[in-house]
Length: 534
Image 1: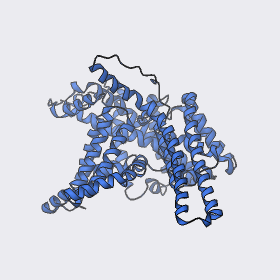
Image 2 (image 1 turned 180 degrees about the vertical axis):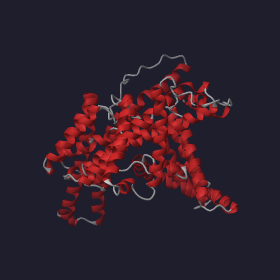
Image 3 (image 1 turned 90 degrees about the vertical axis):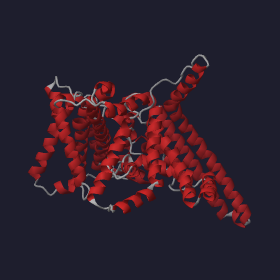
Image 4 (image 1 turned 45 degrees about the vertical axis):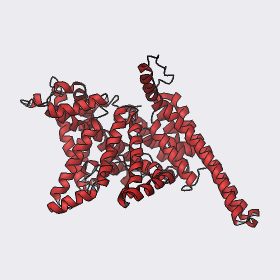
């Protein structure tokens, strides 16, 4: 079931009707039924993996909770007479058993992700080595499509498993409620990757219908459809032509293609988030925000705190911090401090953790060398920013550049935008070599376009409707920029709600009309989202 299809709109209407008509204590059952039905429309066979992930995590968290309860009962009863050493030994034994349960569930679920997403990539590398020795290639027994949303719901459930192990959240006793947390359809296939403590209470608690939720949620949902269907889907064919034929374009045209892709992927992914966050807002549920005007960031590090926020938070919490405080990494820092000085010793452990995080982030997005290099490049710029901050501060002081001045902040935002835009296309053109070829074309394609058609050769000028749609999408990009600028101070919806009702209705109807005229033709019967592939 495609998100931008008429079938999905009808599905939402049915879900909302059933949700608000059901007694509040059973609304979570409606969401569970809707989530399973939604997933089955893609491939009912893959539902088995969702069930395995959910029930294995539920079983592990309940087993750990029972061990904690038994420990509390024992130490509060007959174990009171034990010595301090015996109590510590008992707690250590319980912790060891909990760790075994956690690791078993973690490895069981990670193995599914590794097999479906990374086994064929690893096998390709093995076959390359074998070809050097003229040995026959090994066959891939797992060459089939990965379950929809596998990376997203696996990470979400692993986060819940680890939080339960660390005692940050109480284990959910109802296995069907755990299944709902795993399979909640608005965020299952493309995120956000929610924390159990943040989302579970909202899912399991009933919500009544309110006009404000309906109004604000509907506005955000329609705005998301506009981003996706009017902007992203208009730029998609142009971007595909640039990626496929960059060698025949001028440097200026190739550069515009890179910028178009930056707009396309933002409109595509943030559009999906707006659609689903708007739907949830109608039901009184607040999903974790995934975007905070990322293209206004002043550094790559800040950009990743504002783009795909939930993924960055997941890696920070479950990978970066555990590596940063690990015994071996702290020992490495102490050794480096003794040999190379305090600053080097303090920075090295964080840099090691960042390398691991960004290699993992790249491979999470895609199992190929292009994404691995993309992730490492992001990590490299973040690490360089940390190490060279004193140098930049000294340069700013010498040049008398005020950190809070508007020209400097504008320069920082433009610099960061161009940097991340160039990095973004590296794994998307095709191979890593093709991505670098596009970069090279930007700086070596010196022929100057003559006229608009030569500057934009990737636009289908033979179709007047397609050409008009492209320029409407450009205007839509300007509207997105304006909304982002306004949102720096307050939500745009809080501004428009003060307008007269006829004016608000006219604006709402105008956006829907643009979606109907320009968006429906390309995506009404199935426009895929870019992040669904991850």
